[in-house]
Image (cartoon, helix red, strand yellow):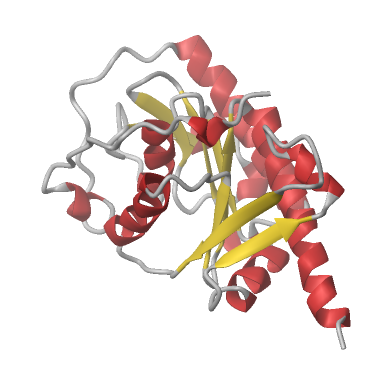
Length: 242
């Protein structure tokens, strides 16, 4: 099974100067993009909504937090509209953005963290779904391991749930990035990790939550559930150690 991070693409993306304003102040709609396939959009929107309802039932999306997306093509992605209850999503709660995070064909507002989704699609061409959640386990682990800057997972059988891992005798590093409301700063930190040549399958944001991705929604959900379990195991070890 090929690992998603094996061949990340260099990020030659040069955002327009207005992008920093788009997420905080105003909505600027993208004008130039490939046509949206309505059937594909409906399929991806349903997959996002189905995943969101399940993850909300787990208690991983409190207070309308979290955001989910799927790639539509090289230029576009479907993503949850900001502020919607993730346990009650339908197609009307999903919108289209371009790879700069600009809305396409709608005046709806995407998540302030849209840039983190589009970054993954730009850097990993075979990534087709991104999930970001705020479970208690993820949030606590992000604070506990923030000083180290990484959660090192090794020796766990469930590491094999991550694409490309075939044995517990492996090391899986999950970086923990400092939280910031300035998305270009966080995007730059993620880019720096990728550009250093270190594998990246997921990352935590301090006091925030987790991002992970995969080739399709089932693989991405598997990654998320496995990482939730593994982080919980690491927290239990810390709690039980003398």
